[in-house]
Length: 184
Image (cartoon, rainbow, N blue to C red; front, side, top):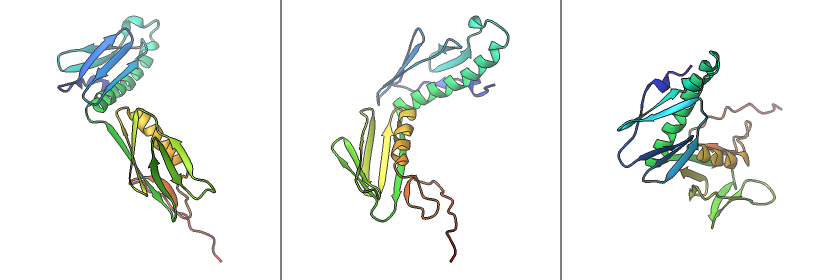
């Protein structure tokens, strides 16, 4: 049962929220995001705040109320992330650790040398911005939190950190627990 949905979502200045049927659209200075929500919840818009509540009118049996309360917390967080995304945006930073491991941008592609026999080329989606300020640092940013996290996870998937040597791609601040190697 969600208790976070009891708080209202504040709508900052410069952000416009529209609801048409089951689709909520949030428009702000950085862009526009939309989300289709299930009929388990209702979204009420006030002057500077929104409330997400369970849709009791769609309840068919008493046991549906528990499911509806779970979805209110989920949709509260998704809508709140949309509001944060169109105002501030989201950012994930990755670091590449290893001798000879590096990354560079070539047009709309991220090219990484990760110890394979060939360089790894990855196309960058249009809704996400990727920067390479130094050969061993990658910054993924955008307005959609889920999309930014997925692109960063796809980049990290090419060479996860090795638990014996520590080489690989990791998030900045990620702690990799190292194992002790073989003893002679």
